[in-house]
Picture 1 (spheres, rainbow, N blue to C red):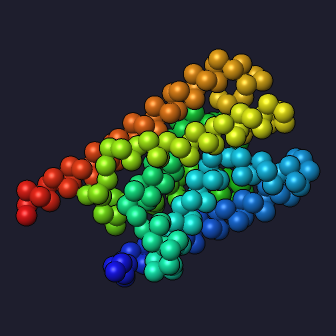
Picture 2 (cartoon, rainbow, N blue to C red):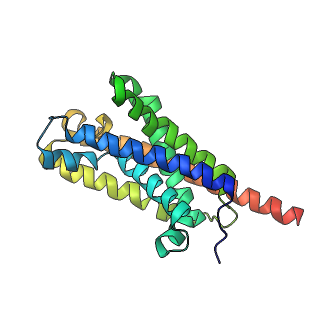
Length: 216
């Protein structure tokens, strides 16, 4: 039987769920009404951003834990392996944006607010959730390989679609501008980042498990 979330966990998740869905829905509205392309194209482009997809995973995961814990989808998203994988994805979003992409665009008004929510606030809050509320003792080194599937599938999708649409959601994936060789190098570097963070999170979990065994 799944343990019900504590009051503090429920309050924290409620805030996280609200902020994540607010940012995603409002950003979707602004994006779809930007006039940058046809509506159908803008719809596809919106879900072509790893930032959006990862924040969507955070929103679905947090909502499932908060409201649907006894359901099959809730039980799936309650798994420490799943929460940890999503934590890695959203932290990669924050790291890459704040170290590589932040100064490429000048944003104002709601766009700036939503940008901070999606790239800083939600990632940081989900990391805090993982630190304080997620049991980590069952994490295993082999989890790494499953966790890398999502970024790999995403990259393949972007590369294939970009080859005929010439739209690449991030500059470092732009084959037209930088060439395939340079983009592949960028992909390898990002994959190493995913792997490093995954192993770091797993290592933290395994160390905590050992400490618990010693204390027992």
